[in-house]
Length: 113
Length: 110
Image (tube, rainbow over all chains, first blue to last red; front, side, top):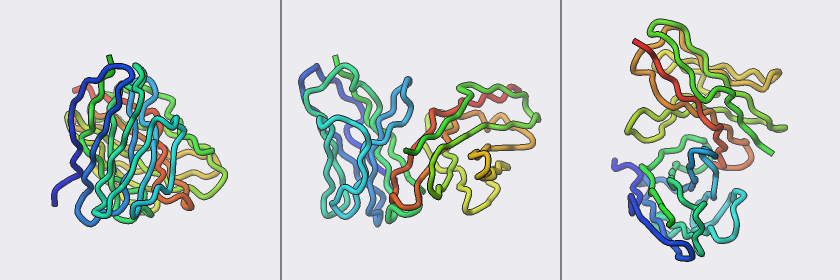
């Protein structure tokens, strides 16, 4: 089985721009979660989707949004980028969102200049 | 609110010595606790969970609800145990909103 795939792996943006990150979960997994990882804050929960519905949301501003498609693939979007949004964005999938057993992707490294 | 703390950012032990990675949590309900590990140049992955009560790679962890702790232990550290370890919590009622601690970097000295 292929693992969780995230694209792009690296990207550079400037302040004020927006970015869209993509995540393909493991085949058969229906829950997708997103995390922001920074050296200072560690892993911060962004949101979790299941069957195209957002079930959980972390404490991030509305500039951070996401969605899930019928094939369980997910995207997250960050608008009006700020320098502080520079981070590794990790996607994780799980079978049904009831186990806590998350399978992580390699992440998308976003640098905001 | 759910919160996970790991008091040590860095922990160094000699090969063959016992190792204990500390984890404390705050949550008023019924939690599920996990340990995740990230080896160098690898993805973050689940190491063990309290409900399975398994020993994985020689590691064990016991949930102590009285002390709200879930410390990770191994009697004899190996060089390949060097990695970043994250303690994590999931509230049983909140689907997969898994909250992670800040992590402890374990270095095993040969």
